[in-house]
Image 1 (cartoon, helix red, strand yellow):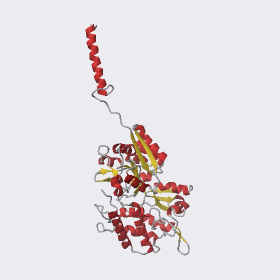
Image 2 (cartoon, helix red, strand yellow):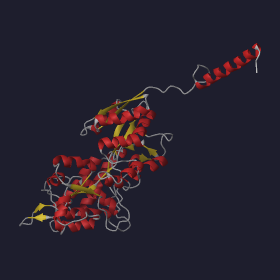
Image 3 (cartoon, helix red, strand yellow):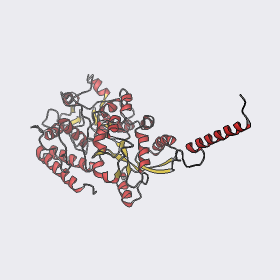
Image 4 (cartoon, one colour):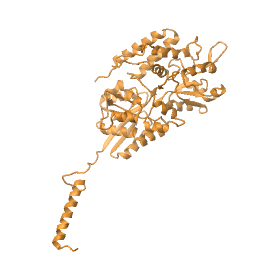
Amino acid sequence: MQFSRTQLIIIGSVLAVILLAVGIFTGILPGTRQGTPQLPDVNLTVWGIEDRVTMQDVFGAYQAIRQNVHITYVQKDPTTYEQDVVNALAAGNGPDIIMFHNTWLPKHYNKIVPVSDTQMTMQTLQQTFPTVITQDFTANGNIYALPLYIDTLALFYNQDTFDQNGIAVPPQDWLALQNLVPKLRQENASGNITKPAVALGGSAATVDNASDILELLMLQAGAKMTDDAFTQATFAANVQSTTPGIDALNFYTQFADPTSQYYTWNDSLDPSLDSFAKGDTPMIFAYQSEAAAIKAKNPFLNFTVTAMPQPTGATKAVNFPDYWGLAVTNNSKNPSWAWDAILGVTANDTVAEKYLTETQHPPALRSLIDKYVQDPNLGVFAKQALSARSWPQIDQPKIRAIFSQMISAVISGSLKPADALGQAEQQVTALMAANQPQQ
């Protein structure tokens, strides 16, 4: 078929109009309809206590996806980190994102900005992370932080000592652990402990994680640590005609009571982590993050990690967490982009696993927990993350000190257990009243 000159001109004109319209519509050519706008350059500053090179690598993986975002990570001193953050935010020159401890929300919620529903919903959070994250990082339907990992207390035991004493399997419940005490405890002729069976019963002066262990025992026993309104501590109160708080305190301190058949510890002994590393104490309770310190103290120690003991006959496990997440501060000028960065690091399987690989921390994502549950080093902690439970603490360091003082009062005999527990409850309640953040 042949076209006349006039027909060719008409066809060419129509094609030109079509191409112009497509160009304007897609933004290739300037016009009234713009295409996808160019993303703005965004600069974010992150503060934390994690290794700088590690975090630069992790955020670098996110920046490879979001090339318009530029992140500067600043590694801070762990001993002054919390106060450094508080001071910087008060002065208005704080970072966009901070590493945020799992106990900080009651104390610092007024310093951080929750994620929008368009970026993450509560339902998505619950599908993505274990229950403890909802306990620790949400309030009034808002999500304030997301976890980098979840660490939990576990039983560390000396494999050589167990083998030499014919103990084939570690204790799975507290009764089984009690029954191991006479078999593993060593005393001199005067009845003094020379080698304890387990680091239990002492104050924080000698038992690392003493407060956390006692808090776990209370939670396992069913204690309600605070009232629903978060106005007072209630761990000394009865619960359905039971006394979980006092029961847990009595159970813990019996291991430091010379009149108990399970006596195996006193505060004149070496600190538990050191004693375990030397091979003198065959069982301690520690976090995965402490394993490296043990290996550094004694690279030749043959130890194994197993699940935290549970109450005999318990149908549901309860474990105790200690971990860090990420939160957006109210100083950030780009909170949406800051939250995008947090989501890109914590909720992205690939980036989150890169963080785990570099730090050797246990996973927080449900998808990665499922992947690592059989891992020889992280499997115990991965599984325990699913049953980790927490309680709102207005000031963790001060509460740890109060619990340690309570333990000391009982084992020294200066207070009866019920009186020491009641005093500690009053002290935590006073702490809550004095430290509620201002709106």
